[in-house]
Length: 65
Image 1 (cartoon, helix red, strand yellow):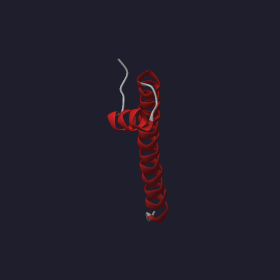
Image 2 (tube, rainbow, N blue to C red; image 1 turned 45 degrees about the vertical axis):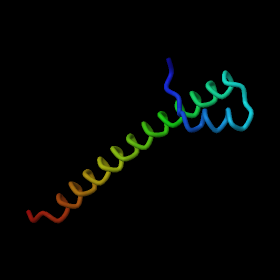
Image 3 (cartoon, rainbow, N blue to C red; image 1 turned 30 degrees about the horizontal axis):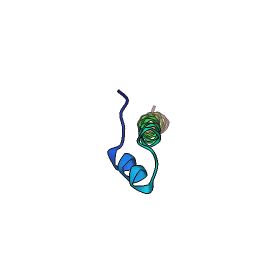
């Protein structure tokens, strides 16, 4: 069974959506949330690598010799 956000499901059912449609929508929201989290992690890792490379370039350029 797919991951589902219960808050979204409960809100949709309370708003009048059928249980099947509310479940499908909540699963889609959870899926998009998971993808967004992966993108945020990848962006943070990329930024870390860029900063590390920048520090190495600066270090090499100011090193005497």
